[in-house]
Image (tube, rainbow, N blue to C red):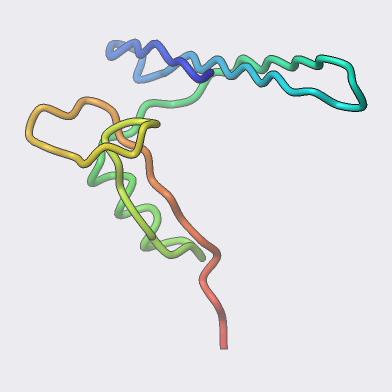
Amino acid sequence: MISSNSDMASQTSNVRMKLKWDEDGQKREAEWSFLMRFFFRYELEHLVRLSNLKLEAVYADYGENPVDKDSKDFVLVCSRRKIG
């Protein structure tokens, strides 16, 4: 489960991730919560171009739905750029 709540005034998102799995016959669970700065789509794409990353895809949400004119969230999938 992944959820996030954005605060446009402070340009931050509170992200919560929860993972459940079975390991050696026991049910396990881990949860992470962290604060992320809010970026705009073209700002992110620009920062990726300036980095050592290659932009693989841009999605509208964690369900990998396509970006459209009403999208408010963006998920960028990047890989490390090969040097040389």
